Image (cartoon, rainbow, N blue to C red):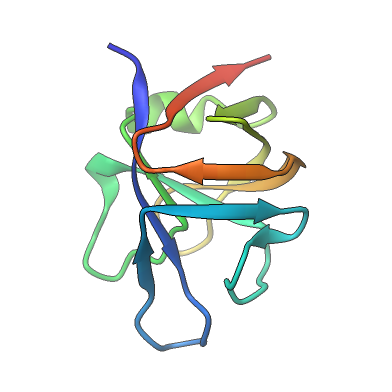
Length: 113
């Protein structure tokens, strides 16, 4: 079974609740409508989601597999993300946008070299 996107979130206002979306345009600097922050995109494994998690993409990859993707490319549907490092003070990883496009809940997620 392949990994998939379980949830998509944007957080337009710092400290305010986010919005869950069925799909989102991923631009060069992050998800459309998301507040710009340290990294364009934050990705978290579904098993690591906590009540205070503010990640953009929740995926069904395991925590170890997601952590091992640092320095690699994460293909999320038609979007490609360069995984740059671990997120600070929260689970998941940060990523830069290599190839923009639209991501949807249910899209396949794959780690590629």
